[in-house]
Image 1 (tube, rainbow, N blue to C red):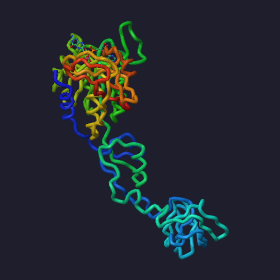
Image 2: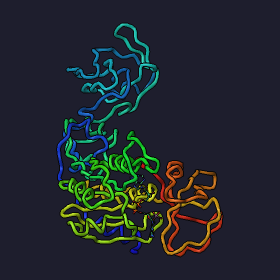
Image 3: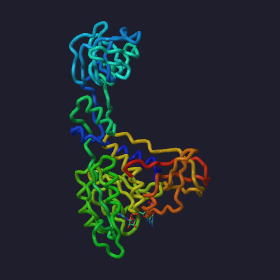
Image 4: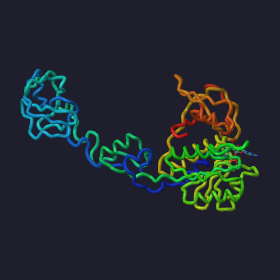
Amino acid sequence: MIPVAEARARILSAFQALPAETVPLPEGLGRILAEPVVARLTQPPLDVSAMDGWAVRATDVATVPATLREIGRVPAGGRFEGTVGPGQCVRIFTGAPLPAGADAVVIQEDADASGDSVTIREGAGAGRYVRKAGLDFRAGDTLLQPGRRLTARDIGIAASTNHPWLRVRRRPRVAILATGDEIVMPGEALGPSQIVSSNSHALAALVRSCGGQPIDLGIARDDAESLTALAAGARGADLVVTTGGASVGDHDLIRSVLGGRGLALDFWTIAMRPGKPLMFGRLDDTPMLGLPGNPVSTMVCGWLFLRPAILALQGAALPDDRIAATLGRDLPANDRREDYLRARIERTENGLVATPFPAQDSSMLSLLAAADGLVIRPPLAPAAARGDAVEAVLFTDGI
Ligand SMILES: Nc1nc2c(c(=O)[nH]1)N[C@H]1C(S)=C(S)[C@@H](COP(=O)(O)OP(=O)(O)OC[C@H]3O[C@@H](n4cnc5c(N)ncnc54)[C@H](O)[C@@H]3O)O[C@H]1N2
Ligand code: MOO
């Protein structure tokens, strides 16, 4: 059994970023940026008004009230060709370019207009309500760095600088192979001792939420022929994930069958609960992560080992999902496996409080669905009391 941190490091070292591809801007949402987004223009392109009112010369309104003559008007998208001279002003609207000669804007609430005569009641210093050209960004500025998962805000800024498409990492193709005679697909007729392959679906959803493209290879029966045939479908994937058949029982065939058919293991078994029989290696040329079949073990290992691999394939940094919390209940001493306890995590006036559920059996998906995260108990940790400091994983979108 190798430590959790070593398993994670060995898995991560096997992956590098996939090539980039070009996608239309709206399809960039959630993708990992492969090349910097550099401003193609300056924003705003000219000095513009931030308000509706009159463009003035600040010196003309240094003493108020002051009466000016309106010599024209300029809407957003328009342009006033003349120059504002002493005693003159131009009617202006939000976003419109400031006319030559003017250096400030008086908002319309502070002025009274009658014909072309405008009486200013509140003065405005030079630069008042003027957005200088380039206030937001200038052509050539780097606005977004590679490795970033694109948000709606990022799509907005890329659009504002006139990028119709983006360079993002190709979505990793992740083949998912379930195993077991007792497993059937949702919707299929269930025999008395059969169960639904929740793992296939939960893993596919996890893959998708990390930016990958899941490929369902189906459910291999507990025989060498079925397993070999379905595992062949992994060819061409960037990663194959198996679930079940990882342990030591007579029907746990992943190592015994695939071992003779192209599987080269890097490691098998880690000092972790849930997830002890985790395996990692290559199936021919395809990296392979063998997850334990228990549904909670599959998903907790999916979060801790599969997600980082999919992010590494996209050149994305692993978001920090660790938090400091205080324990909401007493815990017994731990054995030599690093324990990940499903827990409710609440924000209180004393900070985050993490309360592990009393039951932790790795078949109980209901408690995983109810959990906000996982309290981490290091190997051989002594008994802990309510109120003690603990580290926890906080689930974010995707699990
Ligand atoms: N003698 C030992 N027995 C076991 C050990 C051990 O060290 N010695 N380890 C236990 C641990 S820990 C785990 S975790 C499990 C993992 O075993 P497998 O990876 O071989 O998983 P299976 O036996 O195939 O299945 C376990 C459990 O999960 C259910 N399952 C499997 N696939 C799915 C699926 N796609 N969707 C939903 N549920 C699934 C399956 O029906 C079993 O109930 O081994 C322990 N045993
Ligand atoms: O490691 Mo198993 O995942 O404890 O049930």
